[in-house]
Amino acid sequence: MTRTLPRDRYAVAAAVLLVLTAVVVGRRIEDGRHTLFVHWPPLFADWDPHAGPGTPAAVLVAVAVVAYGPGLAARLRPGALLGAAWATAMAWIWSLALIDGWHRGVAARLTTRNEYLRVVDRFHDIPAALRDFTHHIVSGTPGPWPAHIAGHPPAATLTFVLLDRIGLRGGGWAGVWCITVGATACVAVLVALRALAGEDLSRRAAPFLVLSPAAVWLGASADAYFAAVASWAVALLALAVTGRPVGWAAGSGLLFGLTCYLSYGLTLFALIAAAVLFLGRHRVRERPLLPVALLAGAAVVPAAFTLAGFDWWEAYHLLVTRYYQGVGGTRPYGYWVWANLACTVVITGLATVAGVRRAGGALVRAPRGLLDRPAPGTPPVAAAEARLALLTLAALLALLVADLSGMSKAETERIWLPFAMWLLPVCAFLPRPRAWLAAQAVLALLVNHLLLTGW
Figure 1 (cartoon, helix red, strand yellow):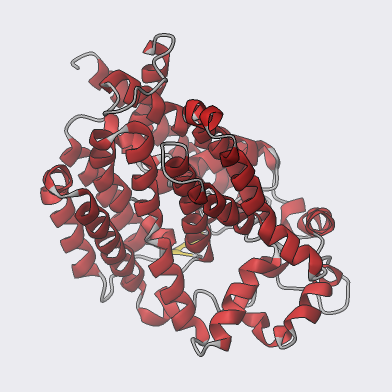
Figure 2 (spheres, rainbow, N blue to C red):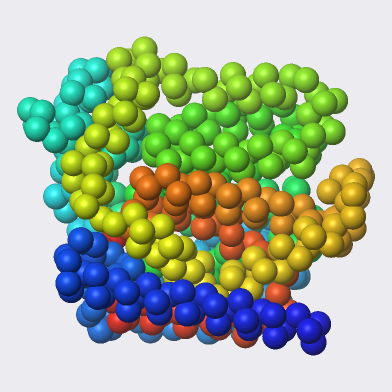
């Protein structure tokens, strides 16, 4: 323990240096060349020190989780823990969002010129809109979609169209939807952790999943909703490969299919799914219907959209063209390929950096066969830690592939929220959880009070 703490500090120091370098270099590039298209690099934000109605609540939630979170997570019954995690995550996200006020922090987030609610009226005939969707992706075509609509498959926009159809109209309801659903992502991750790595690690990870800096962007961002859908897809698969009925695999496949039609980049969640299948490979071999159910479920949403006239592959290739027509073609890859990682440090926090370092050590120390979970019963500590580390490695690999692709230059503090949720659990490896939780909370509070984030 005494030798690992200095190594944690070295990792944290390196992460802080990365962020500071991204700020200084980004400021020089933006001031001199104006090619980053962000006002406070590397974040899409403006310098705007402020407080708001959510400030007292945010401080209160932070203090309560730091003081009582680890103890309650260790004592609560499993069902009560999941309920408490969701409720506390809601309180944390809402209080941070309301630091900017109701209008600026919630209601107006999804109504700006590039957001989904701007085109709801163009979906009065949904089948026709889906058939015609690809004809408006590239700039220069008649009536091109705003950036976010063009940049995502139509299930993203269709969600808000359907909310409008049932009477939940406007940015306020859209924000409530994203926060309420997005807050369940931490619950999904806890469900998966409990199934794959055991009770103890899931309980230790719970306070960090709740009190994350990512909550700054989970507030009223559509990517919070995407993160929840993707996380539940993984959670249901984890349940299926650890003994639950095969139907859970079909449900997982259904959500994976939906995930791919919410965001093109989230197809990379296949890497996390592959890690889950590897960890549950013995059960998968014993139950050959499980992969069949998974694939059958995964085919439902793509089949429905294809029959409706939307071609995913054609749309993606058109999106690449649109991406390079806009700021994506100007933003320098040489800066963003590493500055994106600085954004990841901000949304996951310094505790996650130290946890990732320890996760690497857990995998290196794992002897052969340690990833095999004995049944029944809870896996040994070393095996559980290695399994969590492997799951994290898969999420980190997915994030790095997204980074190297060049299709995620800037704004990754929002875009990579789904991947960030699967990096946070490594905080379960850390000693002195209250100190690390305090660091996470202080970072989130500073960001939300000093900057006006763009999403």
